[in-house]
Amino acid sequence: MTDPRPTMPPRDDITNAQAGYALLAAIMFVGITAVSVGLALVVASRSLDVDKATETSEEIQEISAAIYRYYEDTGSFPGLLSYLVTKPAGVANWFGPYVSARFKAHEAAGFDALTDAWGKPYYLETVGMSGIQVCSMGINGLKDGDDLKTHLEVNSLYWAHTRREIQVVETAIAAYNNHPMSPEYLPAQWESALLLLQANGFLPSGSTATARFLADAWGQVYVPKGAPIMFSVDTIGDPDSALN
Image (cartoon, rainbow, N blue to C red; front, top):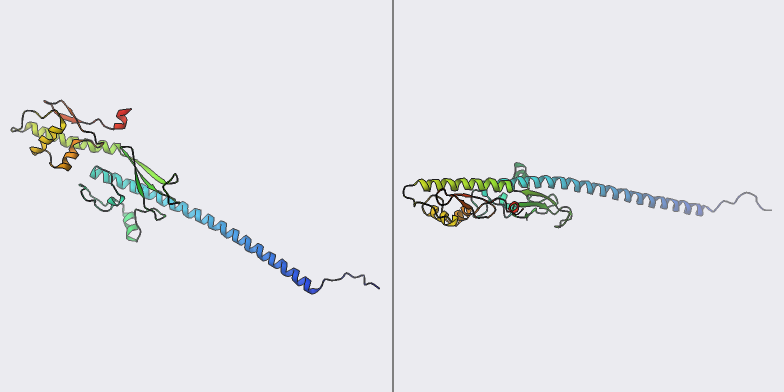
């Protein structure tokens, strides 16, 4: 006679099934944990990159301010960013270092103040005749469209520098004209007039001084006015504006 009660599976089968479920649950747990950890790492990495981008942008602004101060003293852009920290050979009127106290503390702590938050050096790009950009290669470390940069427009500095030079020249011309031993008039060409002023001690001599007083901050030779009686010099100004 057949037993009507249901037949229970062997204990070994039950144990194997339970083990399979446990293994599946463990695999799912490990998978979910790995995905969660991966997402957390991605979020943390992005957050870190945002922090680095913010820090780099702040440093770029400080470097830009230092470049302005360097230009106001020397009349030129630094050829290298290291010139903001260490005086370059042959550059007069360097009164640096031009980096801020925060940069100096950063340097003292063992970091290079002229590298971005990703450890890559900042670099300079000239823009036309009157602009320069301070750039970071950004997160990917490449010079491409993802770079962080700021543009320095220095026409106002060019104007200020040029006007100061013209004042020095005008003072020299006035002293020359009022000196009893001077010839009657300066030559009508500024290049010749400049050499005569230098030869008679009214302006510093030497190739550096000649280059300084020959042309304005845009590299354009000064324009004589009122020659020969009321000799003075002027500047055309921004060459880009002159072409418009």
